[in-house]
Length: 402
Ligand code: ACO
Image (tube, rainbow, N blue to C red; front, side, top):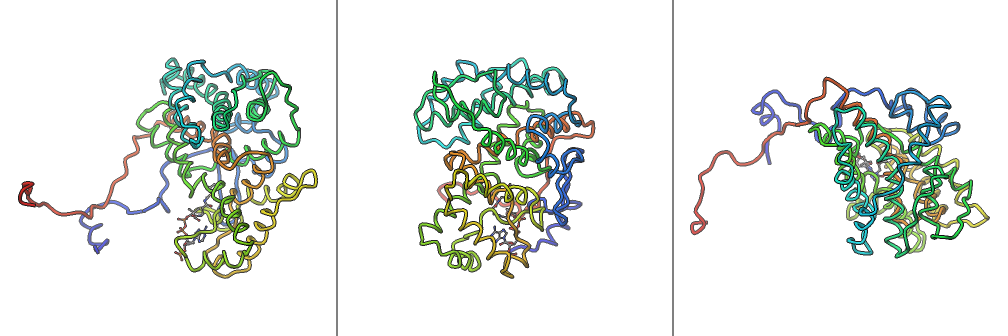
């Protein structure tokens, strides 16, 4: 009930851009996206090449340091990370305080925030050595925290990290292994997880990354900023979409597998039903990450000859949407999350862990972006303006007169 152009005139020289659809908040040299052409590059390298040839460890180094590491740099980075995977024993106590059915995402963000209390020697955003140390600590400890959050949710004992394993291998062992029992790492599983982590590693100024930067712009430390990013990622319109996709596919299956009926619900906007895993603010064409995943989804999901009926539902759903003008005219295509949930499920992860896996993947991006912001002399505290639509001045009314 207000005239927005009149209000804008009154407010003066501000731009109203709800959802920051056309507003750049920073300059950045980390990730390039061309949404119309479906291009994604980290530090100039096409995502397709990194997915095929690189590793998550190498991509992490690339995002944070700007260049691919030499063999020596990579080995040194790897061995530093392996030596920092252990959690402080007192931090372990922390997990006991949550209810058993707690979602692991808030457990993750709380534990990351708590890291700042355990590692007070690496909180200064302007001390290069401290930033380097908090970077290594976060990268090495987040997988341990994630595995503990999972073990806590199923009532199983925690496993200490094994430094002879890579961070990805360690995470799988701490998640699916048992103390004092050998855990046979499945190389296909390690490779699939590594690929998924690479694809999620950065995506320029998305909601969680912008949150990390905004919190960090007040000069909050890296742990506090990343903890805020994890909470932003939890929402179903962002990282929480991978969980929401699987729930949507399971609901369609439970309703008898009628894909057309579901598509009609979305088109009729029944109770705000959306096609989860579809659409993207920047990609108005096929998300290049979804294209890479789709290629591998079938082999991973149908491994050992066991097929998943939810994959068939997903494929039919995609096909229907690609043929339907409602989705085509709105340029709605599958995003990265449309197929990831099915792969995580095939790997043995429960639905609640899907967004945690996204957080593990996105961590190097958050760190790289936070560091770029801190090092940028142009950085100012993030402080958007508003267009006020409330009452003009009015007099206070005593309580007995209201
Ligand atoms: N299903 C049905 N309709 C949709 C969907 C969808 N998934 N996404 C957008 N639309 C429709 C909107 O209703 C709107 O139609 P209208 O103009 O007739 O009202 C039009 O498409 C434009 O959509 P917006 O909401 O303006 O697009 P926006 O850029 O704000 O939203 C978002 C992008 C949040 C990703 C949205 O597409 C969505 O909610 N998708 C489902 C959740 C999801 O998959 N999120 C993961 C995103 S990727 C990531 O975080 C890794």
